[in-house]
Length: 114
Length: 115
Picture 1 (tube, rainbow over the protein chains, first blue to last red):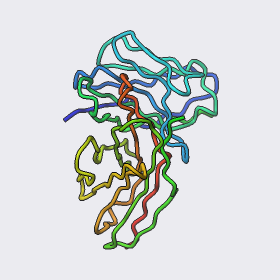
Picture 2 (picture 1 turned 30 degrees about the vertical axis):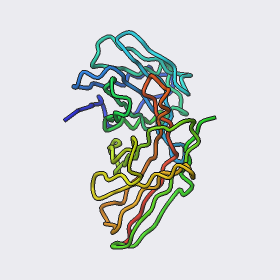
Picture 3 (picture 1 turned 120 degrees about the vertical axis):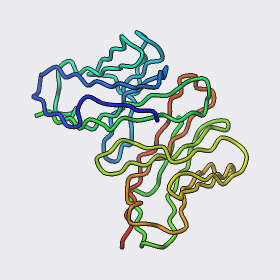
Picture 4 (picture 1 turned 90 degrees about the horizontal axis):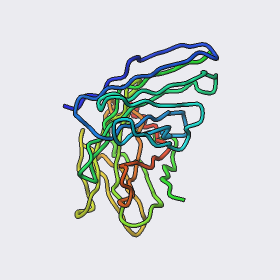
């Protein structure tokens, strides 16, 4: 089974702190994604990566950056956390090559910024 | 703009009754269609997908979905609901021309099954 893990299930940070959210997948997937999930808004794509050191902005990249130094690991960074970044953050990965493959998700990190 | 609509924020069904969670989309071509489920405090789990062929697709946990090309819909169904089906359901669509495997997501529908 594909496993996608995220470093924390719950995280509480203060405004202005630098926050790192880590995601690791164990199936050698090429593409990885970071989403935030807010009630009534569904999933919104923050960033995705299609290869090591490669990244693309999603729909809401402002206030976030990402890092992919190794194929299995994709990190989301909040350079200076703000209260409007309080949300559930979901990481996903997918194997490319078959266009109708499904994305596999981690359990999520619920981040609260005070 | 491409979009996915789940017109109901919430659906309530009595246990044992059939359920339907609606999804319509506005994506060009013949996209791939997906349903995911999120149980409380969990990540998303894949339920089923439509690729091509038979309009009725069967998936996990007894769920199925019906693709209707003329109505651009992909409604999720189950003949007999269980209390354990209570969760948040997301419809998602992939444009076949997208080379990055991105999904366009609906806002989600909360399904409540009453005992």
